[in-house]
Length: 114
Image (cartoon, rainbow, N blue to C red; front, side, top):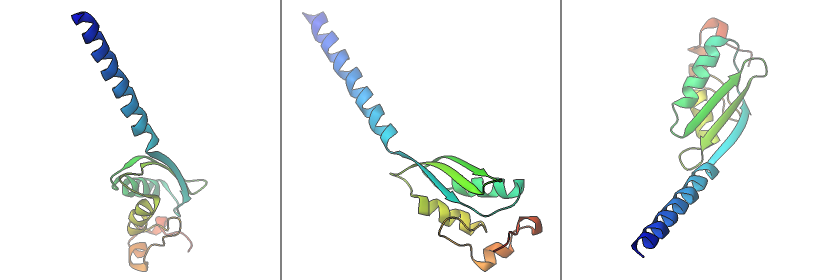
């Protein structure tokens, strides 16, 4: 009888663990938006700015297509939060435009046509 109770409790705990794991997966969201830039230095700067936002799980900026692919935890950040961080680094991101001051801080080869 004691073994049966232990078996039932272990089964219950393992099912609870699987349910919690599934909830965590559902909070991640894939996001895509355009980001202006030109070169590998831009790529490093843009991705670094994205990763500076808590909740960003993955960030990849494509130089050829000028688009950003993110996986974010919606409980911790939004796509707009990431766009603001990238704009602060000097790059227009989605609907958020970099200020003239931030844009002018970019290296000459990184200054894209606005």
